Length: 622
Image 1 (cartoon, rainbow, N blue to C red):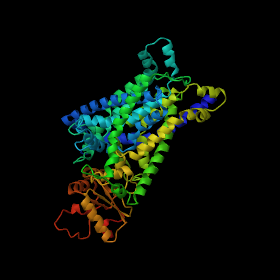
Image 2 (cartoon, rainbow, N blue to C red):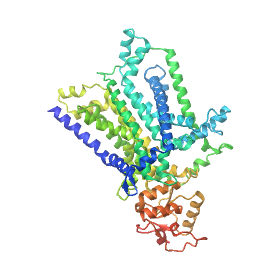
Image 3 (cartoon, helix red, strand yellow):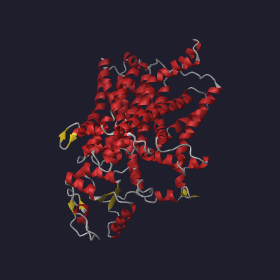
């Protein structure tokens, strides 16, 4: 009877867990898949032929495989060193605590700032360059990408490896030494082998984070093209082409087939322990000094890159006027409407962390603490790998295409769901690895004692996994606060979060402007001077506090126009006539303004149009 109850409970959790993915993962992928075959109203392989016969794509694909593989291997090794220092040395507890916190610091910063941090640190006028008196290496190309990718993925790899390492039973290290094994044999059999599955998962996670990242290549990629930049150029380049972009996105999933096979093979190396023995680590001063020193150097190298982010705002004009000042910081917080954007970010982050933690914990329970058939468990395993292989900007574009015109468009709810799906893989692996290392007989013992499966999970399993659950909550919270790749396409003017504002302001290198909430929404790709002129004109004519101006890069706004069409949130758009004409031709989304703009020169009517399917337009409010 208890067994039947257990199976029903687990099956119920399984159904709840996978309910989200058909709508918010499968359908977007299928939508992109179908779009990758669309060609002038028909279905063909033309988009794939165009992409595969392009020398630029094949070269970029090869570059991505090389730099992602090298970065993933190096990151996993560094993460292992940090985790080993914490769990297998006798360095002071305070130092171990510092390593734990410092290793995840890069997660606290938006990835779009990584490239700028590298430039301001190692560029010709960089802080570290000036301190050393010479440039250490060329930052644009392979070197810059390698540094950026390692810093970017180190926290994720460290969390995976360290979390699993704490569940390794260290008594087997003692047994191995007593049996006369050599140190290297002991190390390989009692530390490395139990971690093989996690190390492989770390490599896969890091590989795909590098393989699909766009922010770092956009800053320091130089002439070393990678596939993510090809995808960006196809989706939101000078001439957006969603069809060939979708084909590129589909081709980016090819490496996942190999990694799925790799993880399946290494699954047999996962080891369960009947209990975790707390033993005193053998004293070894040279070991502690070496690993403590290596960990310190690793973290110093990582944190030094980000020091410049705190230094630059504190000087008058970097790097020419180095006088200390608070003016830049005060200017950022001068506009109190920043509180609204920050509240949005906090709300999204908290709800993402809560929903994400519940979802991943339920998923991990079905795969690590149940007797469900292997094929059923494999569904979640494949979902985990798929969510890790799809670039965030592809998810954002797919959501923009699918949910435009629905109640979810431009809501915080779609941002939260997007974050939960996008970041599912790493938290799931963290909890799964933890649960797999716990005693497999707990549920059986509880059943014999008359306890239900749910009581066992609540009273026994969950308390033992609480440390990992809190780490998962933190992981979701932090990533929801700093992510931008997918959110930039689905955040509305009234649902802006901090990173989308940063993304907007990077075009002008201004960090003290924020959105003004109001009734009229304006989308624009204009430069800073033009925006200020428009704001001044609106304010002088009595519209102060009644509008929101949201800025995009030219190609990004062009892609948004073509994707959302008549469902666009804006009342008025200022844009180059090329994109307006293309959007009007495809979507029939604009109407001519009815008032005389008193232009100094004659312009085509397409530059004086506003969306027609709105209850009011800018022209009727004048």
